[in-house]
Length: 147
Image (tube, one colour):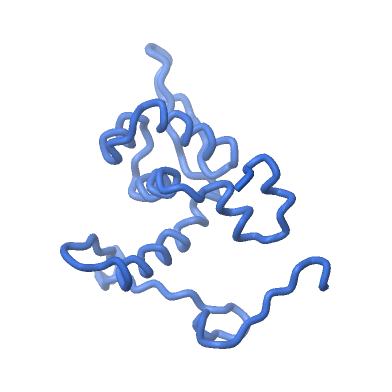
């Protein structure tokens, strides 16, 4: 996919993948939601090469999912915090996880629990208008030219 022209694509899925469609970016966002903010924390958690992590953090910052904030002047150090767009990515992460649990499961898997109720989180995607679980009703795709 050509990231340079991704905003020209009328498909919101294609546009989203141009921003956060690689595994490293998605895992960085997962870790940011788990409370990691610093370069070394991400590097240790992911086992990612520093140059690759630098590129991914810069891209996620440029696209507005993370923001950099200086936490030390001497030596200069910055942390990466989720923006509103980054926080709104959490349901996407949970849907990817739900799919993975069903189709890529087996062995020991990380589980997620609601901190207030203690119940395990079981993510599903629901259409806001009909209340129907996405994938249970027929759908059609309409391109801008067909509107």
